[in-house]
Length: 339
Image 1 (cartoon, rainbow, N blue to C red):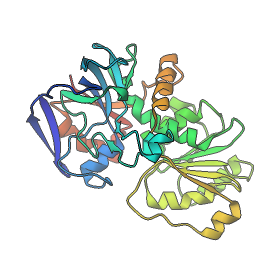
Image 2 (cartoon, rainbow, N blue to C red; image 1 turned 60 degrees about the vertical axis):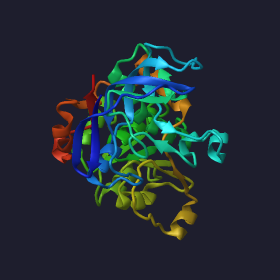
Image 3 (cartoon, rainbow, N blue to C red; image 1 turned 120 degrees about the vertical axis):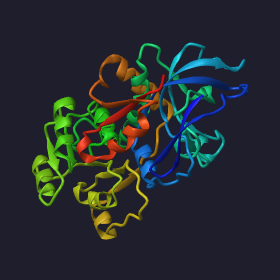
Image 4 (cartoon, rainbow, N blue to C red; image 1 turned 30 degrees about the horizontal axis):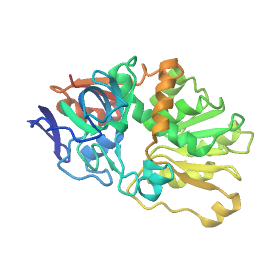
């Protein structure tokens, strides 16, 4: 079967590999149709992704068809279109037992800790599949990245009357914004890129935007009557941004780290205590986030059409991949149409 392997940083290889063998109980065989390219994939390509090992078949944002199921599988049927929850979990550790499988102690994410979906077929636990036969493959491949934002918003417990700030308008930040829009109109977005801020205004209806820089704090203060946002989301994965994000949090507010970096993050303890800031990490998503995201896409409350700015196929993805890293490419989400 057609397969693409990231065998070392900045180098892909196209291969023919063997098709999967017989299914074990609880498993389903999927034919991959669409693959969303995530920041995780881009960082892995550059050799900057924590927990990443080479060689690796990347790809964890998947829209796929079910082509076979084990005899004991009842939640999906052959022919179903599915979005894939790409987190392989143990089901028995303290996190899993408490409903937090997103941070399972032995979690393996497809395309990061174990091989992912840049191949014709993949075998997965059927419990990780979310059926949505009336969505397109591209929409199904977008579900996971949206869920990251949905889980972060759930963690924050934002209320309708709150002012919130999202720092970073890449795909993860945009996912946060999509779910905040379901809760509150009082959203401010900050980014270094004016084109990304324009995207937020044009496609998401966000009119309070701030270009990151020396005047950013004063601008955010002016937008919140001098009180600052009660919830701040940093979706940059940039250590400098993550450390400076504390200054934007109101007294009694909370800061949610959605982005991930390899550095140590430090902050002033007196500053943290004086404002009694709640600091939250948000990792991955849970099954309920996938179900909710699919409902919101089906209802039209989340419009996925503006998200996909670049496209590729098996034959073109290797050559196109590095171009999506360029700031001037305007890439929001690249989609690989596999078959």
